[in-house]
Amino acid sequence: MQGYLRSDGRKGIRNIVAVAYLVECAHHVSRLIVQKAGTDDVHLIGFPGCYPNAYSLQMMKQLCTHPNVGAVLLVSLGCEGFNREALQSAIAASGRPVELLVIQQAGGTLKTLHAGLAAVKRMREMIANTPMVPMRLNELVVGTICGGSDGTSGLTANPAVGRCFDELVKAGTACIFEETGELIGCERIMADRAITPELGVEIDSCVKKAADYYRIMGYGSFAPGNAEGGLTTLEEKSMGAYSKSGSSTISGLLKPGDVPPTGGLYLLDVVPDGEPRFGFPNISDNAEIVELIACGSHVILFTTGRGSVVGSAISPVIKVCANPETYRRMEDDMDVDAGRILEGRATLDEVGSEILALVSAVAAGERSKSEALGHQEFILTYKQFEPIGPACLPASVRIPAQIA
Amino acid sequence: MSTPASSPLLLLHPDDNSLVARRSLVAGEEVTIDGESIRMPQAVALGHKVARRALQSGIAVLKYGAPIGSTTQPVAKGEHLHLHNLKSDYLPSHTRQAKSNSDAH
Image (cartoon, rainbow over all chains, first blue to last red; front, top):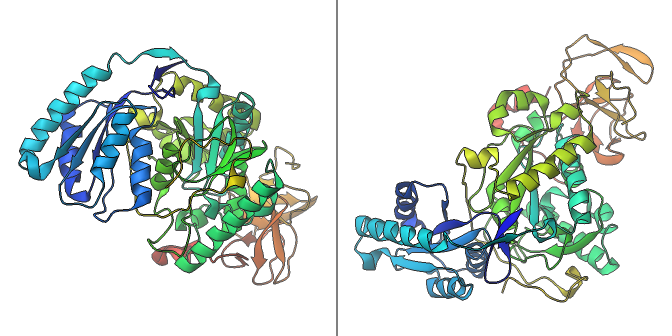
């Protein structure tokens, strides 16, 4: 496996140009630039809101300096509240080519489009010679999420990802699992796996925070399709989701944008701090995927029972299908058929090894199904977080990135 | 998983009072639960649960050896365990309004 060497020493498995709109008003022009560029290594990301927000600025900084990103074109309308100068200088400081287009100054849609296409062409040429260097598994960050879960998810795909995580953690890879709102009911067993008792307390309290938050919202993280697929309660879904974490010791608790300082297993707390202010913590699966990527994830393992088709901008998404009936219906979108376990055609360990091999292959450049189909979904919305406490990363005093 | 590989109903943990359908089962199909042969009182889809034994109302339902909610009415052995007779002890589950009637059984 080889990686694209970035000037901060991190290595990427892709070398994309990100086109980032800084308010919804610049979304269409940005999308036109990506479409007309006509190549799948130019990805669209952005933030739709006009009001400034520390979380969204920090997330955009982390995404635009993600190791899979080689260069960035920022597209601003001109009057929005987003701090484009701060974002531009953070990207420039990372050594990446970055250009800023302000639609009101450039002279509207067509002039910005033409300037944007020229900028993308320039930047693609500039990053074409990015040095490629050997990359080991312990330099990889892997995130996992479940979406469209059903009664098979916790029997096949989730525990198979757990087996894969156990092997990756042994190899020194940083592995991240998440959605504390989908771990309600598992807080005690999870806290017992923490590397220190103090981290256990943090884990317990962040799940309690999630339960309180969702209670105020009036809904748990439980979709109608979960029930149609045989899941009855949130805590039942949680037990299934929890098995994605495998059996390793939990090394730390992250918040969106925190990059794991070393290898190990990390829990990502995605539920905002303080009184609920901006609505549901994660409005859809891609919001969680974006947060995993902001934590440095090079690859996302996405388990599904009902059958999700989404991919992501920036990092490839590998689909592990839990339900054998869904797999037969949606094979074109699925990378791994974990439902074989239910039908006695494979064991959990075999599917775990298959996922591990696929992580290495995709990291080495092979395209996942969603990636080849052009799925580059992206969503980022308002949130607020306090920085993580000192008990959250006991193994290291160094925290490369934190929400300010 | 301690159930025989051939059984369509999976016991995930010895303490469980629920079983999971390994494949879709039709009403009237004969299955064996803990050595006793019974006929499925209704169809149960892949991934759904049935009661391993008769359960009173207000009983904790166990799956993976962990509590996943409480029964809201008596449940017969082999009966489908779902939204109509099992509720969360944390947050209520919601269903698509237009479909909730047909999902409840």
